[in-house]
Image 1 (cartoon, rainbow, N blue to C red):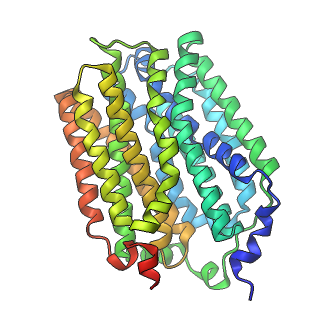
Image 2 (image 1 turned 90 degrees about the vertical axis):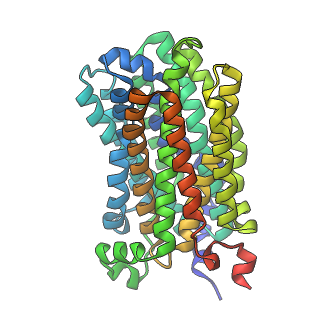
Length: 405
């Protein structure tokens, strides 16, 4: 008997370089989100803004990302996946290019929100494409490649942004990234096969409100949404405001050097793809405990005045939070009883709202109380995420072999 997944897999089996291309698309989808964080001091000087103001403005893209995550629930079942991916990436180039020419912080913030709308639309539609067009084995491989591409965007995007800004200024930086957005659109259009949504008749008849209500009624999904919120809350708080610590005395790094700092994400490119396998073997609860505990263990190192020690702490926090995020992403698909694309959209919405909250609330803490208080608040958020992980239903969050037996 042929399963649904088996009938879908040939569509992607013809895609000879699937892991490489999917990784590249993942990289080019979210590279704009992270690149601007490497030049926060330069942007603050350009707009005459405080650390909290520019931190919020740069991370305002998460507002658009949260809105788009919910929008996927309402519109995602009606659109051609391939068209949505490449069109979103092409449209993303427009606000990115406009950022090169704005001189008003409010306009800058609005353009970042628009960027977020297109980034998450491309992200969500790519994930839906993979879920609908791949067999289980193909999907696991492609997802690992996509997540690795996203992690790489954290590192390479910051390196490019810091280097270009140091050499040619802020406007040249955004012009370059607009070109990368267009490259992503061209690659997605050429590489992905045309893919209408494959919802069953029963699923397509359900209203978006009913789907959202069912997902929010699922205790495991509610918990995973909250964990995702707290993960990005901590991540954005850490990697946004540490830039001001590193740019100030006694460390006083230049924009290019700040970009080089993000080699701390290199270990995460190795460890993050292992999250799915670890959760399947040991259970999501244990994967959450280990990854969140690791991230918390790295936080005290961020209070040092020694650059090598701070870099080591950042690497540890990066490995822990990326691993936890990958675990949460996989867990959502496992916990959702139906409409997994919608569940993923709601997770992304909660996740990026957490990033916005981290930028806003921790920015206030940083300006009022300093870096030590900010790190303490980050640790509290990660500890709360671990406490929530402890409440996950064992039948859903245990190892796969035990769940199946």
